[in-house]
Length: 410
Ligand code: BGC
Image (cartoon, rainbow, N blue to C red; front, side):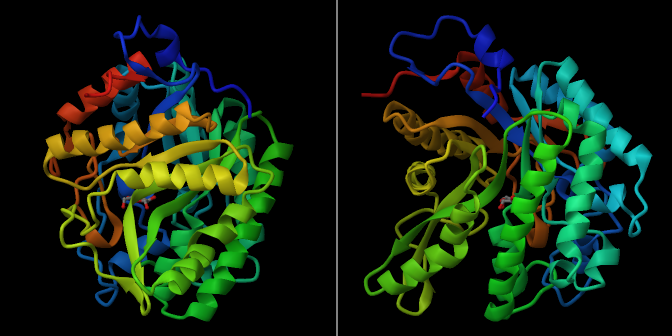
């Protein structure tokens, strides 16, 4: 993978005695996605889904964080924290609002964002697809339409022509494994289907789409590391759940991890632990506190998933998302800090971990759950869109600037 040099680590002062350092050049960033922060993405599948009274969505995305207009503020926040990377996604429905009609102005808008990042010493980490697709393709069957992969690859090629020279790192698809399970088995994301056979077919489509996208991006301008962002969890077998655990690991993660062969890195996105019993997903451990998402508060999952990914694939790992939905920012700091303790143990054991991105910069549109869950290290006023730093932003900034965690508590 090409070097992802980092301003923050270069500028780091002498670490405190006993500080737990990360490797030189380690990337510290925050992740976001277009539909969750831009606002007004009325021409995509998610907008359609969130306005469908039967979808189970709690509220529509509306103006989101108005990052469509306020992206300079967002980048200033990232740069002001001394972070080395900002991960954001391209909104396909803006770039190609009708089939084959590409918007030069929209590509240029993303180019200006990349350029602003570069001016401020921040690596633009581009996600080519973070769940959403244009309505014209959704109405034709979405990822089940025979032409979907070709259309996506073409979109990536066109966008890459416009911004590839500025990209510092790329994620092809965000969590294709979640698009599969949530869209086609659990029915909680578009297209709201509950059919395992279709889910398995979509998994294959998305893995193939990823591979074709990697080839297409490598053939275009720019020279940057490419991977996919995979949703990973500590999948725990409760008594009698071993067979289900193994099957789940295969369908949800392993087939995608094999699909990463040849990539520059695997993007691990991790939030919690899940229990599997003989009948499928089993209840969470009542002894473990729950987050706003109903997940177990389980920061240990990150270490587990990073170790497993590295061992399974032999590839470098970038933690492209890790975070917690909570109203209590002290709890967020505790979660992030414990997750990073585990990540540092991975580094100490020689695992090739290249970077860590917090999910997320701003409180934003949490898909089916609307604006309830607070994953941001900044709050956003829902009327004025004013961004306000939370203590976790200051805390994370200190870690990034030092490129180290404080000494371990005895
Ligand atoms: C997704 C994000 C989402 C986050 C928190 C990840 O699975 O990539 O879009 O907001 O988890 O639930």
